[in-house]
Amino acid sequence: MSRTDNITQLNTCVQEPCNLDPVVAGLRAARERWRAAHQRERESGGREFPSRQALETVVRDLCGVLFPMRLGPPDLRQESEDYYVGHTLDAALNALHQQIRLELAYAVRHSGRGGDDIEVRATRIVRDFAAELPGIRVLLDTDIDAAFRGDPAAHSVDEVVLCYPGALAIIHHRLAHKLYQSGVPLVARIISEIAHGQTSIDIHPGAQIGTGFFIDRGIGVVIGETAIIGSNVRLYQAVTLGAKRFPVDDQGGLQKGLPRHPIVEDDVVIYAGAAVLGRIVVGRGSTVGGNVWLTRSLPPGTHVTQADSQHAVA
Image (tube, rainbow, N blue to C red; front, side, top):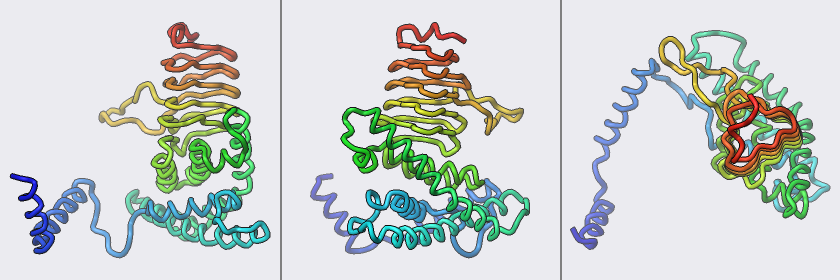
């Protein structure tokens, strides 16, 4: 068939809309099969899950609250900072409350367990989260300073906040980690995946990260759920802090929640392309060279290159 014939058919379909009833019915049947296979009852009412779109707005506003003159609106003036922060924070927290309530309600429905009133729990989580924001800002300042000190190409801390994907990823992570700790892992994971989509840096919200954390460049960095990272740690692009193996239970399913990712102590540098796998310890002050495949613990102060990584001390 010629290109002209294809265009003619397309124009005909646009001018004479196809009958979509069979498509709608087929999609409904697929949904019903999936719900039956996963023991999901048909829900009435509104949305059942947290919304990625809503959380994108929440995080954008929280970034502005944390860094008003750099990530806030372009026409903001310093004399209006407090008004902007208060107004924006109120809107962001109310929207976050709604998304947290959705996750809590979903968890109650599908766990079969009761518990505290969902509204009370959601309010408590949001209030606690709001109270932590000043501390999160102080923590982020250490990350921004670390990036400025660690990259000779950085001309100012403002450039780091405005331009560096690693800075954006760690802002999202600090927010997501606090929510993860508060018992709303789905909301936290969505926030981390928003940053993943924007930066190609994948930090699970469960990862514990100390002060002064710097990801240079950042594309392809992966940090797993149970990773523990100390203070003043620097990672370069394509570094993986991952699992070595995935134990299974008696039914053959993956066991979840087990410590399976590395512990990276203070003042460690891990260069581009390195893979640090399993529940091993990279000792304080160590350096892991580019493209190293590391599955054994390192004593403090060790320097490992690709050529000698197989001799790392167990």
